[in-house]
Image (cartoon, rainbow, N blue to C red; front, side, top):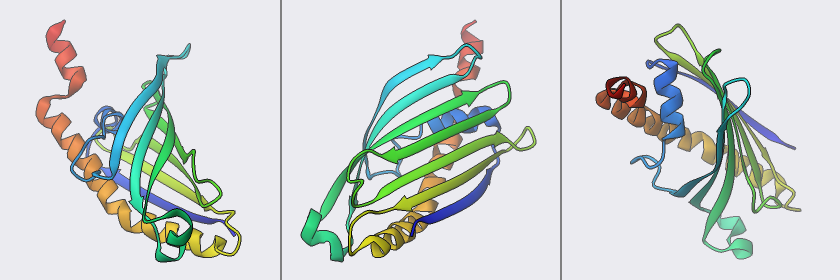
Amino acid sequence: MVLFFEHTQSYGHNFETASLAYLNRYPNPYAKHVLSSDTLESYIDDEGRLRTTRLVVKTGRLPQFIKPFLGNSLNSWIIEKSVVDPKSKILLSYTANVDHRKFIKVEEYLKYSCDDGKSTLVESKVKFSSNFVGFKQRIEQWSHNRFSSNMSNSREGLKFVMNKLKEKGGLWYREKELA
């Protein structure tokens, strides 16, 4: 059995602010579990879209029933691929853990889109799948529940970064001042 989690959120910030916040969301006070975030590749493709690949290292706690196999805490390496299309005002992102995939594979698909010019709609779909014989269903359910409960921190962290960008005028605003 594979579990899915779907969520939609609207932010009262324009697409430019929301997409810039997404790309700069770490560090923030709601993401203390994120140990590092490194950009592996970033370029503008032939269609004017920003393509970025990052490696994120996160730490977390494990459920009691799995500690005999993996220990008390776990660092996980996550690959994140994103595409920002400024013309259509759409950001697409795919993240997945690259380690511990027998234990649990978590894949997240995000779509940021311009809602009405003043706000941004974020659609999220997360897939949880485990191949850990004997614990598959328990691991998927635990991961699903944990993700659901951590969702508010993710939203608050993104809002925090958006508000900081708004306070500072955003990078695109400072570029206009320099021109």
